[in-house]
Length: 154
Image 1 (cartoon, rainbow, N blue to C red):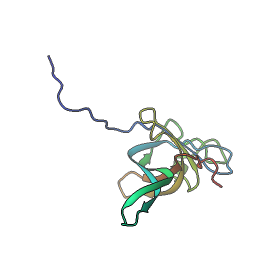
Image 2: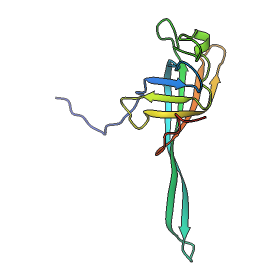
Image 3: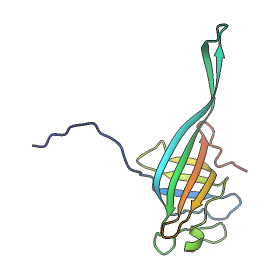
Image 4: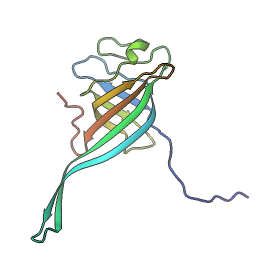
């Protein structure tokens, strides 16, 4: 009979859907991305209050947000890599290699990690290409914890 020892750990990435919506476009861009790494950070602004001796006696926490760094690469899914560039319903492989733009809304589907799943706004993104290697993207995504500003960015 087998005996299990040790502690359970969570590993792997379960994010599967990435839908980008640019402002003033007709079609959403369901870019086919394969995530290779995700880093989620919770941030807030904190003002601390001190007493006469200079000791911290209280704090106000506000502007809570979550920031997600997504490392990924574009992949082929069926006959088209991407469905929609804002003007037509289908993109070519070369167009699917295009980064989303800052200000675009990104909706992430992740059934295994509800803390990562949700609405974000693209704040910055970069593409890396080298001879003999695949193209990789690094996307910086953010949203407020209490107010979803990803859908109302102008």
